[in-house]
Length: 454
Image (tube, rainbow, N blue to C red; front, side):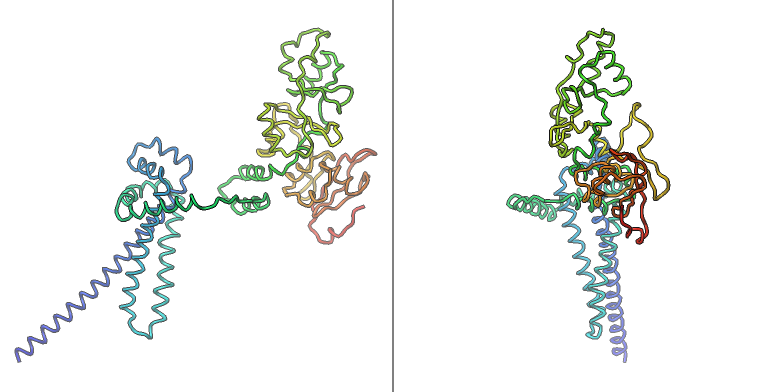
């Protein structure tokens, strides 16, 4: 009896020990998976942190004397190796998580009736956990705290960078990509301005100010803008005739306030040069007999359809700030300056001589009054539209009044109107030669859009 009792006692102790050993192994496996998830989150977050550092933050690292700051700067010097280390380590950790969890689940669900539950847990749930905990959440946090997170992970990543076999795999991966890049054909990417505009609209963030966004839009549209769209028309140009005396020239210059003035012979179609006011200053007290025409510099002529990005390059190469715009018949259409070009990117640039009053009046949220000579490109800016409908109908016209005359086939009289897209253009004032002012009404009713222009 004693022997049987002893054997029973031994068997009970053995079974209890094995069960406790299995449970302790199960719990240790769970704990190990949790640790691996934390490591995966840190490694994934470091990828977002290191590669989202702003230029100012990278510049601050150069003067950072702390060991963490110096390590971050060191790792960023070889970004390809850093990225390879992060990707290799992250993949090792994620594979380890999958293997261990699969082993745990296979012991828990060793019954064929639980195969569906096993599949859902092993594939769907584990993948979801790795994606959310190990990728999405840490990258969002690291992106917002890039500098501090980079410093936090600087020592671990520097250690992994030198640790075999990661260091060996890193070299193989980097060298392999270099070989592929060397032998791969470089293909140019052709992107239209419309695609760039669409991309800009999609990537607009709340952190980007309205002014910065307008500058980006101006850069995108810059290459598609013609000189005639931004030029100062000849009727608004202050020019001096060659036959004028020096006193008359000085009075016109003082009244206009411009630093450069075109000079013409007989009429503006025959521009002979440009007078720089700084050249005239040393002779401001001279007599009427002074030959001021000797100070006139050679004019620079450009066609109306020249793109302003090409004109900007010519301004830079020729070291000039003003050009005379000529039409297809050789007549002078107006002038264009470096300031006009820059305003297409940064917006209006005003100085002490510019009029503060704008050439339009806003009556309410849907009604505006513009001068007939208002450039269409300025109309688009005020109405905050892309102007595609206007551009498709404008033909050779570049002003609001010219647009209406060209589409109506005549000079519209007072209260006559023309409808374009969602806008009703009503003549406020006109004479036999031109349209002086136009009321622009934004239409919001489909019935209004069905009206026909006179």
